[in-house]
Length: 465
Image (cartoon, rainbow, N blue to C red; front, side, top):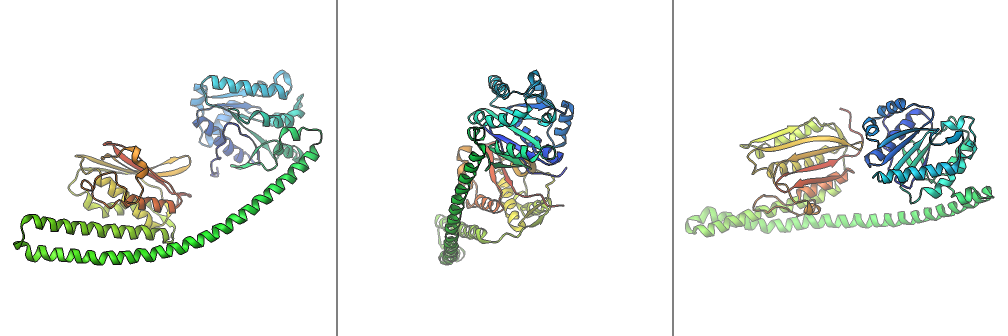
């Protein structure tokens, strides 16, 4: 089956139609919509018309949604069309809306946060009393769903319904789904207009109002784009000035630092015999702090350059890249008892040199903050969550208090004393800047003295190995 992106989240109060063209499109939509409800803990009700439960369970399994456990717990339930739409052998909008309201109240009474409803519409092709009132029912639902704890999707096969019917379907749903894209429906009309005595006049008035609204929106967007262009030019100029300033500051700061370091070294090397132990100790502290200052200046310049350096994306063998990083960090592990676990990592599309900096910084931190463990453990791996690959580095080191997690990726922000763990406080800021430039996310989870796990994502499809 062709991979499709997941359906954007539909929430309680949404009433969407889906006009699909083939079974594959319908299956992808169906699996994504139902998975949302099950993962949110909602009661999910599926109305069967032409299919039996086993066939639907198999269809859902083909798109990776296995509903058997939810059927057993009662969170997922099948009902047939006679129990829902066609009680007494006929369709009645009032009765159906009452059923939706009653089932939603029952689900809430059972402790579910909401009810998710999906009904097959193929029964409309039967010779059923009241079937012609289906569009009336769809329109009146726009008065039921807003503010309710119910969300529903109404699928219509474009190959089996006439265009006139599908136009009415589109007009009566506030949200419309094509493929797995959800649109706020430009053509939706409230029931008071759609079911009023002059539908054509109301439709014309509604469309004209929408045209005016869209025109104003487009004018506003043009104005925003013009403002954005001007602001971008100002920011580019500011960045150039900052770059020049950074290099100037670097040179101006490093010149006196070199002098301080040089004279301190001369005093230690050539006059140590004339100086007591304490002044010699002070001179060494001066040199150590000069070295720390030089490292800070270097990291600041590196941080500044990353924002301007153009990305050069290409296929990256992540397993090989991480192995190279581990080899470079071999000195950090010498003489230590470290259990290192490296799971196979899927290839990706990224800027390899920049991505290497991410892994070097995160792995270096993992080795640093497990230093006090008699038996350290560092695990490198990945997992799939909601259709995206999440990479992680997990350690059993000192961890940190999550109440300070907001400071974690800030420049010069440190959660541990410099005397305990060396560093400039810029490494994680560099990691965040690189991942954000790739369009990804980075975050951490930790417990004090229980270790930490750093996660990041890289958008886009994995590269082919």
